[in-house]
Length: 365
Image 1 (cartoon, one colour):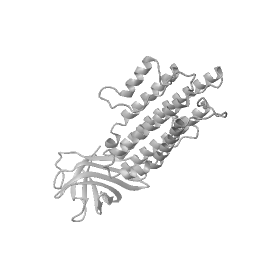
Image 2 (cartoon, rainbow, N blue to C red):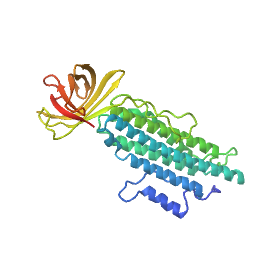
Image 3 (cartoon, rainbow, N blue to C red):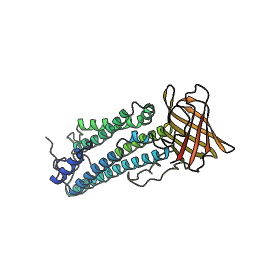
Image 4 (cartoon, one colour):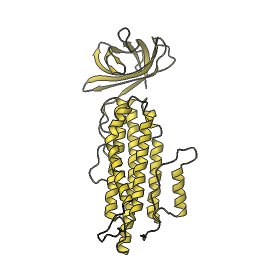
């Protein structure tokens, strides 16, 4: 039976073990964390970095709690900013994981200098890395499952499918390494994994996970805006640390946001509209907009999410409806009210249109 010069990699000093167990189980009333605590190898520095990994994962999960449900009703700019924060929290987790991996590799280097042919037990490395990939894949599948009832589910799933397959393939390769003991040149079981190989493996995992979650958040951004959007972040240079600062792409032109104030009674329709959100901006000199609302008519409540293309004419601003949700033609006409902070919006559509006719008063948000 092969023995390792390392102590059991999953044994840690009592205070550190208690802290990791608390983080893994979650505080009362919180959902448990699914990330297995990385091994500390009875090294104070390594164990401290391992605790940082668990804390960073917990912070990311708290940042993203019910993210998908929260961002869909938001104005597009606010939803995009939330997605950028979420991606940033995940990159903080990768940075913590990178610092932990470097502390483990430095430990291997240190001990190898003191004792010939010493290396990290490969089983411990594989089990830990399989656990990291498994926690990420489980988190992604849970999110996709929660979106299954959404009209955007298929598009979001397609947006992340390639990266998901890459992560599954990497995890399968690590499991093969765990199931088949490595052989040294003389046919005996190899002692373990060297620092160089460990660093290379960790870099591959970090890059795979970075691409996975970047693709997911980008797919959410595209779903929120119902079109292909600029990247949330620029790709890092090759070899950069996972937590290094990232330059942001152009986030688009300024957007004016207008909402309906319930109870104003200044509406024309079957009943008051609900969840009205009008966003207006200018792109290449052309007024554009997006109008979302729940509009009552004689057949029920119609949920509307339409794109607008504008052209100025006199004192009113007229937008042509360019919509697939629902499919419709017509116009949205905007007129200034007595206040510069208010607009009167009129829906001018043909009879029996899928968008109800009507008028409402909007105020700047």
